[in-house]
Image (cartoon, rainbow, N blue to C red; front, side, top):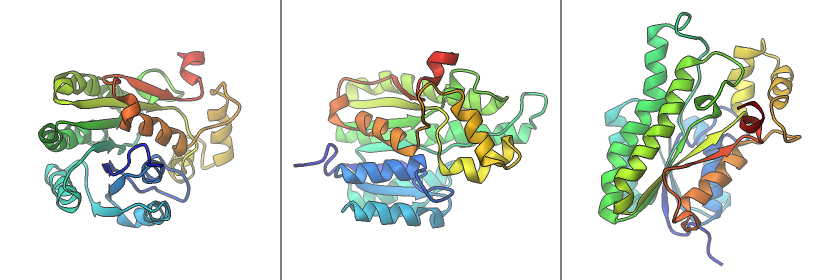
Length: 266
C-alpha cells in the first residue's frame, strides 16, 4: 500500500522545533514522511532539526536539510536551488515559519513591527516567488501556508503585527491560488489555534504567564470547547490532506484547527 503523497518532494520551511515534542514543522515533516514523501527541511538553527531528522528516518523516508533565513531573498533562493539539486523537483511547499510579539501600535517599536512583517509575511512572499516557477514548469504543485486564528479574531492579547501578518498570509494565499489555478497549482492555508507545542514552554509562558507553563495552558484550554488541547500533529494532518490528491479540488481556502475556539468566541 502506497502513502498518500508517495514519492513527492516536500520543501518544509521551519522543519525544526524550539524544543522536544511536536512542533508544527517537525510534525509535518514526520507525517509527510510516513505517507511516502521525500523531505527537504530547512531551519535557521540546524540543531533544531536533529529530532526531526531522527523521526523522518524512523518513518523510512529520505531527508535533506539546509540552513535558511526566511527573511533573506538570497537564503531562500539558495535553499530552493538546493532542494531541486537534491531531488529534481518540488511538489509541496509548506511555509511554517512565524512568531508573535506582544503589543499594539503604541507599545510596539517600528523595529519589532518590521521584523514581524519580514518573518511572518514577507517570508511567504519570497518562498512563493522562487517555488512557483518550478511548480509551473512541472504543471503541478501544492502550497500550504501556516496562518493563525490570531489572523481572524481576538485571541486574548494584543499582538497587532502578528495578527495583521497572519491575516495577510490568508489573503495572499487566496490571491496566489486564483492566479495559478490554471497552472495546476493549489494554494491553501492551515489556521491553527492555541495548540500545545514546544513554543508554549520555551517562549510563550515567559511572555504571557510569568513563566508559569501550567497557568498558560489552563488559560488557553479555557478558550477551547473540546476537552483537550491539540498539538503539531493536528496541524500536520490538516496539511497532509491539503498536500494530497484527496484535496485535488480544494484551493484558495483554509482549514481551521482550533478545537472549536473560533466558533465559540468568533
